[in-house]
Length: 189
Image 1 (spheres, rainbow, N blue to C red):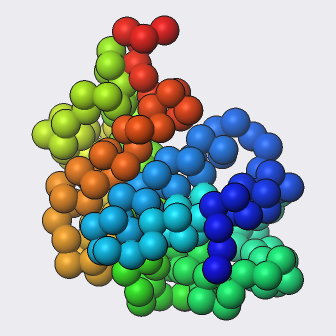
Image 2: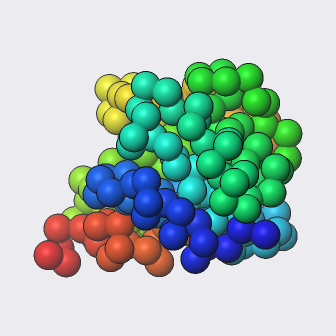
């Protein structure tokens, strides 16, 4: 089973850009929160989240096309690789998310981008970000415009969860990593 330590080793070989490391950490933290919600193995879900954009930096125009073979060769289980591939559903491939892990990754990948952008605008960053504030920004299509809101809503529907509940879990999951992901806010600089 993929460990977080192993996921970080593998990512280090491929991901060097600071913003991509931050994104990997955000998704890792959100996946940990989703695992807790579903009563699953938190470290395993975090590892999948951390590794999800494995080939993105080197192959941005062929994202997920250089993931399966190298990760299988690195010892990942086929279902772990499938989970990673499933976050590209409807955008890059037709690997439909089936498990709660896959559905969660599909949903939180974009969702953490809006949470991060929202937290960056606040004096206390993510430390006191509430879902109500997040939802105001989520509804503003111009805010973090590159984050696909429909994809997030589709993921929430797959999970059978409301966007507010998923956002609350992700915010709670990301909060302990506030210093590491640069989301302590301007009041703490």
